Amino acid sequence: MQKLRPDMDIGHNIQRLRRKVNMTQDQVVAHLQLLGIEISKSTYAKLETNRMNIKVSELVALSKIFNADISEFFDGLV
Image 1 (cartoon, one colour):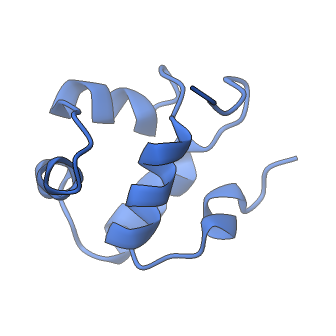
Image 2 (cartoon, one colour):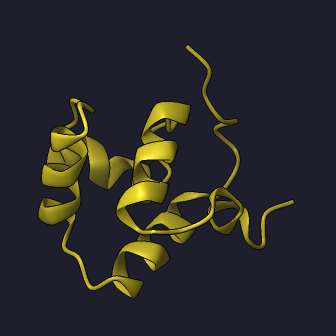
């Protein structure tokens, strides 16, 4: 299973995109689960705070939920 590097501050961008579409963490988790991504609210919160690596499958699902291009998750990252 491929994951992103843990030192990338992608969590801030995930949170920014979630807020842009006016969704709560609970709503995002519910949408992820509907897409077949098994994730809890506490795990999702860890993604937003960079305490957990994000899986590529989760990133793709979030791009669908937020109607965002994958590149938006990497804005400002080196």
